Image (cartoon, rainbow, N blue to C red):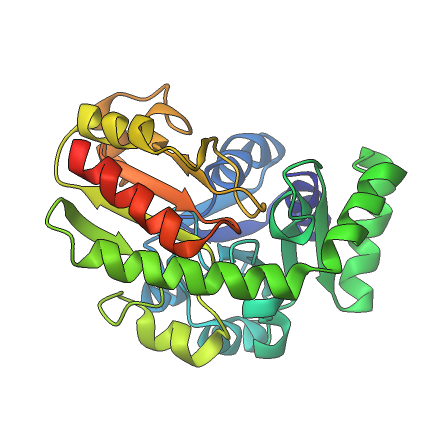
Length: 306
């Protein structure tokens, strides 16, 4: 989050306006909506990947547009070239959090995006043992972020930097395997009678599949799906999985599974979660490097008991 907040603060000031998609990472939304507002920065939320709504929300004082690609947890993929074509003529900066994609699967800067953010905690380091964040972009913008970082203090310690450097050596191999495993898992879940819907860019049924196929080299290692059932159904599934660890992170060598309603959004009621699109039976599964057949077999046995 230090990478995200420092970059946003570097590009905004009192009187600025920020637009972000409503399915952005909840802490990013929280920062923009509660912290920035205290300093005179206004914001507008627009529906996921809706670029017509985005364009309509832009104002003369808009300075920054923020999104993820893909988003957490629904894997929404915004059309980055079109986003850039809307913002650049208006001299509005764009920032994309590409943590889910990694630089292996998607490079937003190649599509005209100004700043790209990655959580080094996830795929870049890849072993669930470090906290780190990165901001990449043109020299001028990155200089602004770097100068503010010295003031705010969000500086990575040397050992964390070493761990990320170590992880980068195997990043491409890990991500390609996770892409393949996640695709196989998504296809299996899409045909399962106990699964209501699967959110994965590699499926032809996915809303932004055409955009993802055009922009991405792989579809990522996170498969999100909704079970046919309620909160208890989701809990039985998560508890019944034997291979993945129950944890809210992602991108490591170990598979992780979570039920967002009881973890990331535990403080909200069922009705409050539904209002922001988080179903009680929503599951986010981040595949690791275990044997794909064993992972899928484990998911199937847990579904049978859920």
